Length: 176
Figure (cartoon, rainbow, N blue to C red):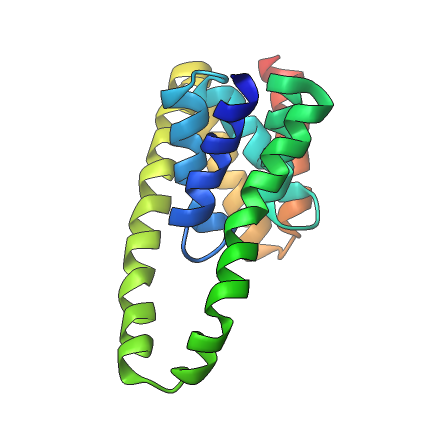
């Protein structure tokens, strides 16, 4: 039954997460943390941070890791397949329709209206991560990480993967 749950947990975000990995992250978080309880919010945020630091699609990296943690090698395979299956199916079925209506004003409007929903979902998960960080690390450590990360990204143009890596090292040294 674990493998069925893994498939469902990653197949649903694949179907509903229009816009790719970033749009699916809140949906995966709901399945993994809230629905099945395989991870805490803190553990999920660490998986997300590590996944963001690595090259490639975030959803498949998270699926592979979480699937492995829950069901071993087979679990990783099931979760990764479940993540990519909706895209494969939709691509095969809908490519002709999308090509036919690519210049349609309705298609362009639909895409325009979906973007704010994705932004709201990402904002909600960002606030959940903030609350989790405040509970685990306190205000001082959270504010220090936020300010230093902001300067590293915006002022000094340091690559986000390096900022995430340095944040992990900071957490291990000062919060571990």
